[in-house]
Image (tube, rainbow, N blue to C red; front, top):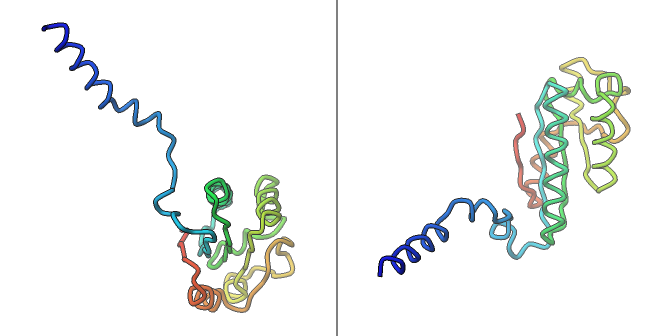
Length: 155
């Protein structure tokens, strides 16, 4: 009787063990269920190259995660605020430039706000080639949200 009780207790402990839950690979099945296409525009306002690089890596991981789960990403990354000064070859390090190039090849579109470029005295001629200059990123947000794009703020 004692042995049987111990076996049951040990089995219950194993079943309820956090290690078992940690071993399960996380996914986004519930959120992405039924989607074939996911449209998103990121509102990027970071003014630090390390934060920018971190977020470019995160965009790539997000894109790859959607693809791995059978969802085609339609991603736009729109820059505004003082961070537009980072969008030149002179301001970016090699890693960030390579991330921009890689993401562009995967279909990610990049926009920089001409208003922000003017306000923060950044030279539009210095933009890296992966980035398209638009008149006003607010108009992009308005247009793309009305076309069904989710907007995610990156500060």
